[in-house]
Amino acid sequence: MLWIMAAQDLPGAAEIPHVWFDQIGPVALLPREWALTMLDIRFLSILRWTGIALAIAFAGGVSPAPLIGTLLALTATLAQCLGPKAFTGGFATHHENAAILTTLLLAACYPRPSACPHAANRTARGVMLMCALVIGIMYMEVGCHRLLRGGAAMFLGDTIVAWQVSHSLQYSETGFRLGLLAANHPVLAVASKAGFLLATIAELVAPLCVLMGTRRRIAWIGALIAMHVGSALMMNVHFWENLVLLLVFCSGLTQWGASAGSSRRAGITPATMSS
Image (cartoon, rainbow, N blue to C red; front, side, top):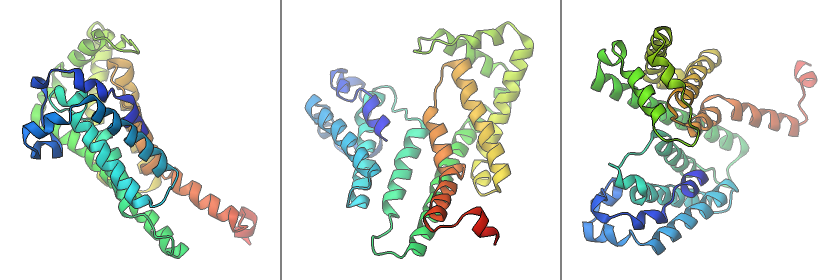
């Protein structure tokens, strides 16, 4: 959330011609005159720094955490609706939406200070599962959209090869050009198509995989990690935020770490557990 608020040049949106501005999300509910008044550099700067402060406060557990988390989610949503992306068709990647929704869930289900440890642990497990399902559903939506819009032709034709070539030729900070190889090496082109199909299948079954056992879930996460790494190398499309969301909410590592920490605090070791 801190990255979402800090990385994008939110005040820079004030310099873009307002005729290109698309009202999206909750901003679409406002009269256009009201929406345009928010494209002020001072308001956008305040919004950005407010979001940064709220992200740091929520991560630090500052009270009242539910209110701070809710305000953070709303501030980040408003930033998405007013930032530079609102001038390019309103495109927002699902990792941004997933981060906002999981923050809102964490805030809504934040345990009360008076809650007993057992109830707090049960709430924590439940909200982590809900966050994982949100992430899985968003992956599924991307896969369904691709399948419904493109059909079988998207996987049987040269769509992924064309994407790799076009993205490799575009400017990027990383500047990877590996996607150009797919146009000259048939074996690599076939491998790209197969990987594209497998990645789409992994997206379609994402909510189910979240509920599966550890081994199947780790295999699913491995497939998505391979997809994101391949997208970075072949197309300069980076979704490292998705990798963070997958590891935090879907891998079980945070739950394992919390359980291990609780066991150490309680004086429980493998030796005492075996006895």
